[in-house]
Image 1 (tube, rainbow, N blue to C red):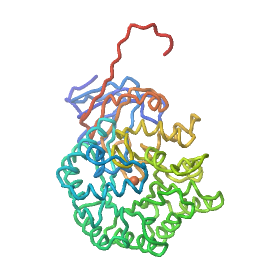
Image 2 (cartoon, rainbow, N blue to C red; image 1 turned 45 degrees about the horizontal axis):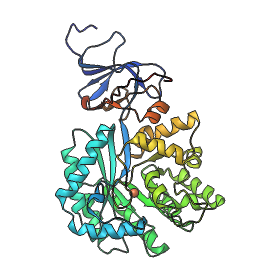
Image 3 (tube, rainbow, N blue to C red; image 1 turned 180 degrees about the vertical axis):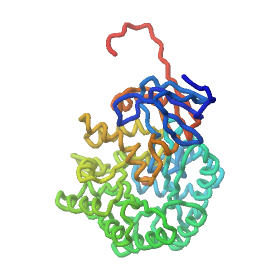
Image 4 (cartoon, rainbow, N blue to C red; image 1 turned 60 degrees about the vertical axis):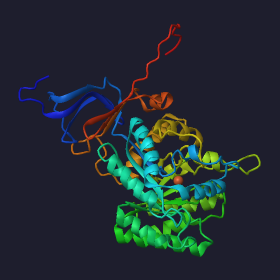
Length: 423
Ligand code: FE2
């Protein structure tokens, strides 16, 4: 390598097989951003040989509830396993919330997510009359603490309703003023259609006042009569917020009759709404009370993709009263999503891999996600040579690089004295 004038880059990654390309290439990062790595080869202050392994500009986690993570350690067991009982248990636990303990729990999961290759995250944080802005303040603290190693977007999330829970509209406004990035919502959790519409109207009013995106929990129910996805589409077009609105969960879409589902998916496509499926939580929570055959609870992923809708997935809940497992590993969730959405063909597996990468970046509105010159200098080197192999093995995140700095490394080593029958 030639370095007559000293290092020209902070970090060079040699032989990186960037997902979506055909051949390994060298990548160069300077000042926290990608620069062109000339074919003659420039030198870096630090160099890593990716050895042809698969590289991505980081995983994007678009939907996780960091204020609730790990609450299973400190609450009664959800005996029914239902969403309703979980919300009751949560309401009682909120009386003991402090900024410090929420930040401690959230910080533990942010740390493990980074080690899992997550470079960007969007988190839904409760705002209601019970907890006030304590969880928001906690996550603002977490965002400050981890600012150098992860980009964190905070959604102000009125889980208990806006009309139903008086004072919440003002709290949402205050949350945005304090530094929340995105206006959340849960319009199905209102007393009726008119209140759901008012919930959406208020959320858009606040979003427009703050020039913020909207990301709502939509129809997290098996009830085929839930209609807030259609209402969200109408509000999005009316506000001119196409491309800036995300709908999470949308379980009812799976329960709709085919003709109505087709109609609503058309509206989602027209409104440019991003869709998030959360298969871990919703496979666990939805369909519990069905007789066989039981509904699966996850939204119509393949049908949405077929209509050109941007679909990503998230962890949602993690070791709390809603869901007992999870470690915010996008490869674990990719494996689960492929199963839950019946995505088994090679091109479908690639489509699943797009969800926590390029699709998630679109949800978060990231304009500098990629490895082209000028993009943020984020990279994850996976110990695999294809997306399918990475998902199969939950491959080690060999290196996690944030703005040109290695922030985590993983190497799993197995030794054995067995004959190798197959590789
Ligand atoms: Fe959620």
